[in-house]
Each structure stands twice: as C-alpha cells, then as structure tokens.
Length: 167
Image (cartoon, rainbow, N blue to C red; front, top):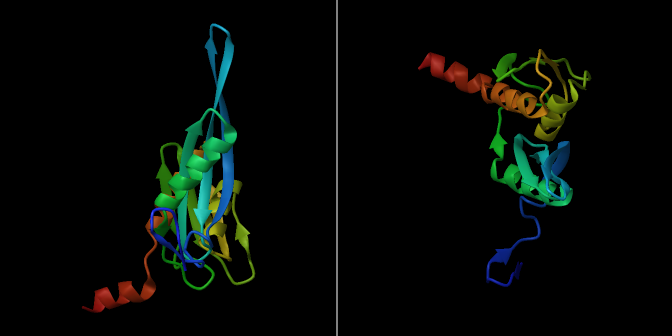
C-alpha cells in the first residue's frame, strides 16, 4: 500500500483498476464565429466491471480526449448494480426513454448477447453472457443507453420476490 501526495492510501487492487470503458458515440458540434468554425465534442461512454455493475457517462469538451476523460469520470460516479442470474437476466423487461424503446429477454446458455450496438455494450459491461435485446424505435445513442438502464433497473431477484410473497 502506498500513499499519494495528499496522504490518502492507494491500494493496488482498487475497484477503479478492474473497470472497463467503452466509447459508444462521439459527436462533433460546430459553432460559427467571426474567424470561422469553432468545434466542440461530446462523448458517450459505458463503464463496467463485468460483474453486475455498470455506469453511463456523458462528457463535453473542446478536445475529443478531454470529452472522453470527462465521460469516463462521470460513468465511474454513476456505477449502478443490477440483478442478474448466472449469465442471463432473471426475467423479460421492457422500457422506454424519450423516443427509444427496448425489450430485453432471457436466453438459453450458449446463445450469447444478441442486441444492437449500444444495448450490447451495456449488457457486455454488465457481465451478461446470454440475452436477447431489441431496440424498437429511436436511433439516438444516449436515449438507447438510458432506456437500457431503465429496463435493467426493473430487474428483480427471483428469491427475494418469492420470499416477499410468502411473508
């Protein structure tokens, strides 16, 4: 264990070390000014540990690298845990966010992740191995990712639900 400049201890196996990042979308925006065009960039990133935790980050900056860095920081702050059974989800879920609608279904072992690019990235970062997802409308990447998160938030553990019904 070592200390950084401010005296805080840093451990080698910290949770930040095993997080993976995936850049989903980079948008370039142009602002016309007196001297020409001024460009800015926004980045959409998914961060996950492959073990029930995943987060989404969105960052804006004048440089692509700065936008990605800000998005990764935002994703690390917004890590959320979701219920999954072994390598799939416990039950079928459906959710919509703004114009994007998504359906996520369980799949038999060996099926793999069958989904569109944005939902696939979220599900792979979550650690799900066998699942089928379909995007029904809306091609905005940010809304697709948010709809996926909203659907995953509806997941419930089978054992907890059964125990609540008995009591």
